[in-house]
Image (cartoon, rainbow, N blue to C red; front, side):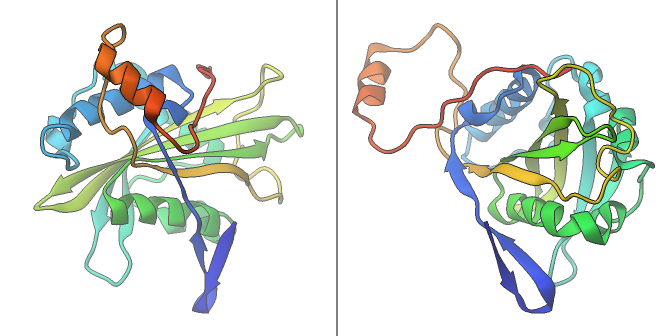
Length: 226
């Protein structure tokens, strides 16, 4: 769901969720590294502190941005881009403003997600369905991680995973290959349970706390896209 402001600006509604909403094992690893840094002072870390394990293996699915906050709305400038993401959009984009790179058709669906990440200083996770050039349904899973300089979000790292339940799909021009817009399944700010719990070390007190929690829980199946 979205709301409209003057001049055709979209304001999307975002759910509140926990890290468990993230499906991809590799995206969860990236998020856990961010959470360990966040836990020290309850604020997003600086980008130079962020050194996740096996980062080189993920570079083809990562996009680095700097944030220009000199105007009324933040501008995200692409600083690096993986080859798989370039193929999905049909061209490379280093040095280009993100809204110009995605174009007017996709910007209303893409930009509010980044703006929410910058405004909140928290990870944002989204899942949308898109069709490849052969009409196969592909899940487009995006995890945004913010980083601070002088108490303001100055960098964002995006991890993008694509997954097709039917198996193989064509990534070339995935985001531009047809006129159908993305079909959002989830837009959420990760603002709950902002800590990294080491597997196998849940204390008895934590078990009681979890049992006493009220309100909806977010359950997610663990899926590692190709």
